Length: 140
Image (cartoon, rainbow, N blue to C red; front, side, top):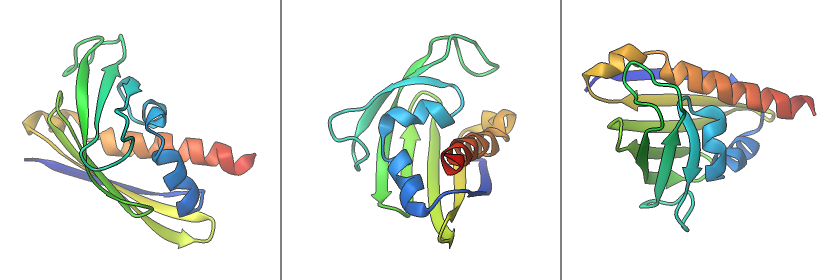
């Protein structure tokens, strides 16, 4: 399966980035194409299943108002989270490392079927959106 990797330094501590990521309802804020999420009672925990809902705009590979399931595979608090998106058949891994006391490097790896080539920008776009959210928090 094709694999795409992107990394970006975020303007927040690893603890603050993790606190944001650990809240399932924040996923639509930074993950492209997701408009809503309904996590199960486990939240961000291995084996958790979240219902995800796409936006109303169709794309080349996504129907409008698509729904799917996000299965949380692995969670290493403050360091790594991995999940599988059943609808798009994407495997995702996000790693966090401390760059400095107030900065975190995020590395996002996405693997999926052949059509992922159409979405090479997906990890970069997601990290740019996450960066913008961290930048906004850093300015407050």
